[in-house]
Every structure is written in C-alpha cells, then in structure tokens.
Figure 1 (cartoon, one colour):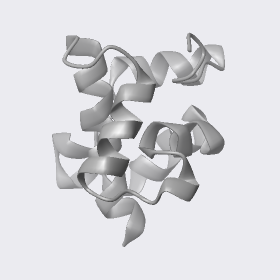
Figure 2 (cartoon, one colour):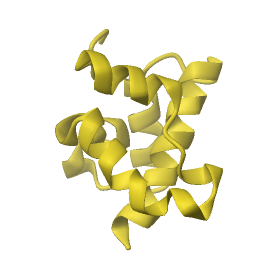
Figure 3 (cartoon, one colour):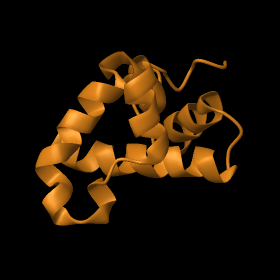
Length: 91
C-alpha cells in the first residue's frame, strides 16, 4: 500500500524537477515535509528514494505499470539507475 501511494508522488516530484518547477531535490523534500507532513525522519521523499536507490525504485514500479502511465519511470529515474546517480548528487 505504501509503495502504491508514494511511488506516483515520487515520479511527480521527479517531473517537477525536470520541468524546472523546483530548483533542486532539497526544495522538493522541504515542501513535502512542511506541506503535506511527509515524515521528517525519512529526510523527504527524494532523500528516501536515494536511500533505496534508483534501481530499486524502478523494480518497485514494475508490478504497478499495468495501472497506467502514473507508474512509468521517468527518464531521469532511468538515467539515475543506469549511472548510479542520486537526487542529491548536485546538492
């Protein structure tokens, strides 16, 4: 249940970064902690994703992809999985 709720939120946060709606991962995480009450002890949604790793996130998405594009990994996430990158690489 947790994955089914958090993964689309993570993908949308990734899209916001790609579209330039937010400047960096830190801003996304702070907004989610202060705005919707994401658990601060997790460090924020993108920080949580970094602790899992992009490859693991993509694996978690696979069972849900039949539910539609909401669960399709973004290009950024796929690139991070290929290169071993993280959302906080540039912070």
